[in-house]
Length: 446
Image (cartoon, rainbow, N blue to C red; front, side):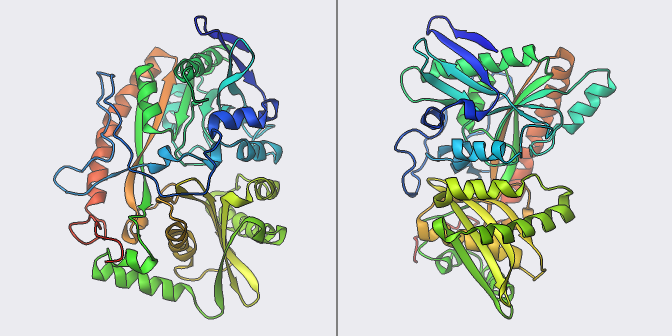
């Protein structure tokens, strides 16, 4: 498909059936612009986003405070991450080349590319045709079931996202410059044209930053919120410094968990860069397969994926492994952004109390403190993260639905869901383990 995006700007949109059809330099110039991939540094305080112009719904304020609680609810700092590893050409091409997407997986690459009259790439977006709703972490199974019971056909649909990755990041990847706004509008026009061309019921943009969420609301998309739990590094000098911000009871509980996790003969190895070998990936894949098969059925990522990301972006990977009695028994895979550490996959072939918390949460927090990263995102789910210092953070998605009846029904559902999410965020914020009325705000090292 090739379509005009903006006659005045001379932009056209085409669909690339594989990310290999787009030069890595062009993709990354839009996704993670030149100079953004520097060593991670602490993130500056983000400026508040402007109010939405969608009169039907006032979007939640960024970094707002829950009514009556005095507790700040976090806006996802990752949307301000100047280098997001998941939207890089290296990560997305590893998904395709390993067979995690494409073929008969139900994820058909249909990437959007906006080009100028000179043929230069002005914007891109990771887009997939879907024949199911698996691996998305923003759940629309109920919408699909209701529509099909009413005689509609929900699939295929379009998904603008990073497969199997519930981490916030830009989705409308426009190259910086004076034409960026027109290029973003071009991506929206291209997405809608593609939806009509393949007769998809809908297009879904998930885990996008609030700025893009507001923009798509102005373009007529339906707006949805959900929540995760993220750990903010408040300038701590050490893990003990962080513990000092907690109530005495929670501080004692975490120290006990860390002590108990490291039972007889268990040692922890945090690995990055060239320290990660194929033997480590072999061991981690065994963990991933074992735990994934027991909990979720068939894990999404094949063995080849891990070798490819290890080859192409090893300096953006933190692999934390546990060893007992001379063999590896568990591991947690993280990706390193400019200011955020993203926890992604975990697995184990032996059960040891609190080892999951040690590898996935405490080791990640330790690493973020040492590297000066502003945030740890530990993925989807997990209210148990609250007791370990992770705070509730809003996540965002936007939905373009073609059928008027389905659109009305979903809009009504989302209006009620947003109210419920708001109430849940306030309740969760009351359960935080920090001292000083839950804030944990104190001078680092005090």
